Amino acid sequence: MKFVFALLAMFAGLIYWMLNGEPTYVDTVLAHMPVDDRSEMTKDVEKIGGEMDYDISSDGNGSLRIDARERVLVDLYRVWGNEEDLSFRQLVYEAKVRTEQASAPVFLVMQAGLTSAPHGMPVVGRDKAIHGTNDWTTLQIWAGNPAGTKLLETTLQLEIDGPGTVWIDDVKLIKRQTI
Ligand SMILES: [Ca+2]
Image 1 (cartoon, rainbow, N blue to C red):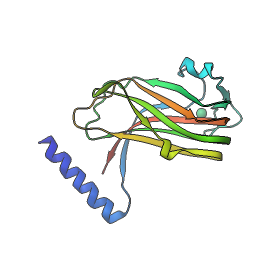
Image 2: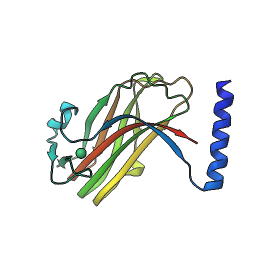
Image 3: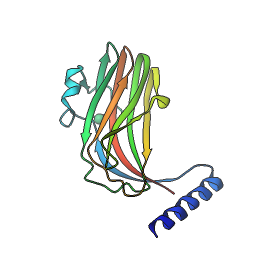
Image 4: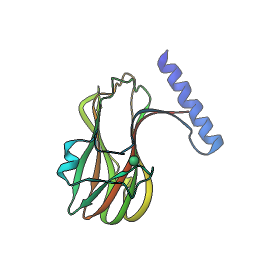
């Protein structure tokens, strides 16, 4: 029965999209890291020389600045998903990113811990990458989930593919329902 409702919801979403030209979302924020200090970040951030920048941020309360000298993939946050039910929902990782003279693509990556992939399913946002010099830009990556999927520990990462300066702020893990 749930499956029938899900099919109906998807069909209604499609009709809505056709009439309105763009999909609408209902978002539930599962975790919000404002990046105002380093308290919740992994030790990886320290290892690659990431530092808080209180002069440049998207929210006025500080951001994380990384001066990359080579390609880095840094673990920013590990989030326990509390076995949240993701049936027919997207898992979205969103962050605001700013770059200065990034010589190579900069993008979000997550190791989505799901009951279907307990050791992490890689979701790589290479197609949403930015490079060069950019003011604050919202980057998002997402994965859809079949019925019965529950959220386990998920690692939110940032990949910087070459030398350059990158700031990251306002990190969110979201459960998204498309209507
Ligand atoms: Ca901040």
